[in-house]
Image (cartoon, rainbow, N blue to C red):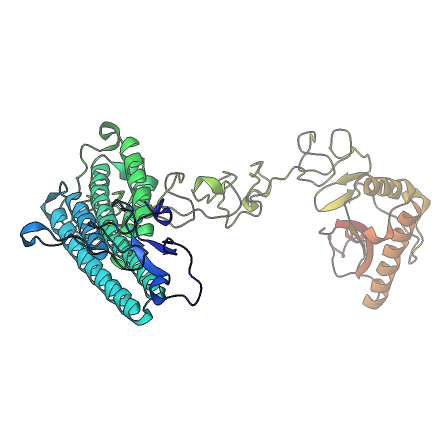
Length: 505
């Protein structure tokens, strides 16, 4: 075997010099000794240079060796290009046969895909052979035509095999998506909508993606989506035992009702999601996760048909709270909606508890006189000998005496006014109006001025006894507010008086 022909792969491009015969001649090289580009098939034995016999391709040498003719005029053995075309046809037939067990429809699609791949392969191989022969005839003995011919044939082979394999891969993925669709239907029958809704949705969506990719010819993406869909469909079946997940009274999916909720698909607004049948808008075919629309799902909502009022009080339970503090006063009218009324008979209509009804600074729980302002420790008003503190006034048991027609207080009234000052000090929340009154004798204007001066004199005395000036107002009424008959001396004596009226806070 020539040294240049060893270790060659099929379709390898050989560019070798012919072996030298005899001694080397000097002078210009003869045309017959130039390098020739040939194709060598390593599967056939290569006889020594000069021998006669059947060869697959031409070998380097001075002249191509003619293969011997068979007896009886038998046809010659096929050349290199014919062999390659035959191998392509065989591959296409094998690909078509590998789909034989997939059903009548699968075999029909496989034969169609294989036929298309075979036609494309033959066309590519013929074009490559014509291109190679054209380049060989044009290049002559330089070997460029053979190189281009081999490159074109190699490209044609790759394209042909890719086309044939693509048809097989697409058919395989399509069969996988069909099988996954059956798994999805089984999962639905087992109640996967209730026990494995996420896996079921993943299987359905990815199976749809795979079919869409197949229609576009994107087999790689289709195969990936089909694998994800199949995995999720199997998980949905595993997580949905039929005995636990299927309601005995539930309807099963059937023709025209994919989700099995009893609503036909042409009317069902959610044909793949069953209606929850909770009595709220069940005719639309869509489940209602939040019937009242308060943002709390019905599974967690204790009042699924009543929206939460969102007032900051127990909003997580989903139930409205018209009376947060449960005091019987609606929150709309309750001034303290989160604090219950104490129901002690004092201002109970406002809804606010009153811990100190009389506002004497002593809580009602410790105040023995909760509705009467008093002093510590019992909260009851202090027992005075000359005055009585009521809700409306400080009542005097004696009369404040002045000099006749003057505003000078007599010393006999100092103990009385001292006790009034102490009552005001014991009840710091009380404010009073000091009223001066006269009898009807004399002119009205004179009586009015006299009454005003006497009231101011009393106020000045109380200020000297440490009573705050802003808690007292002096006002004279003259003879306008009598309490007795001015026609008698006794009545006129009663009308000449000083009163301490408690003013509103």
